[in-house]
Length: 186
Image 1: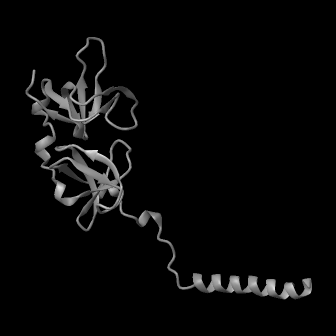
Image 2: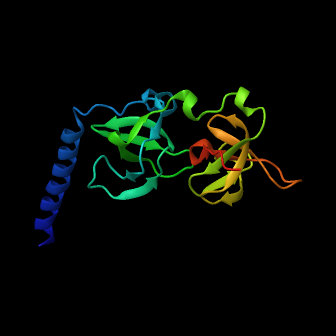
Image 3: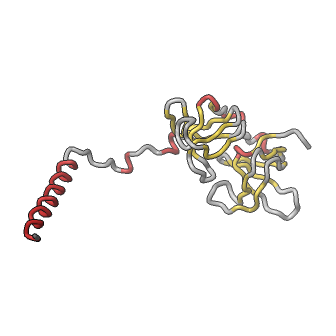
């Protein structure tokens, strides 16, 4: 009985190898990773024109990953139909927002010019956000600021706001500019 199984098993393995070889022929080689586009060069600033949901895919049928408040700055790197693919400076999962809920950011609308940063500017956080020791995600979190916290902004660097502490002896920190808006409340 084992003698009869040997030719069947051998024929099966030979057939599997032949099918694999045939299936692999004609396939294009995988592109060199350096030929992929650099997302930093494709990134474009957008602003949410309404409270909107970030979804796992390009459509309302995909699960909601997060909610973005109105006037939040977004970084778009692509589009799929009527949906914009956004990435997070905070390391959150990328996702899609409806194109109708965003507009291209006016570079002067939310960025502080050097003339405006001569003295402290009153801002307020629009969502809970970490205060970091430097202008980027690689810097450690000093503390967490809750939504509605009033802050004094003294400078802006690459989309990060330098925040001056109100208490003497404390070091300044940085928050993502999309999580704060100017306020006239004293």
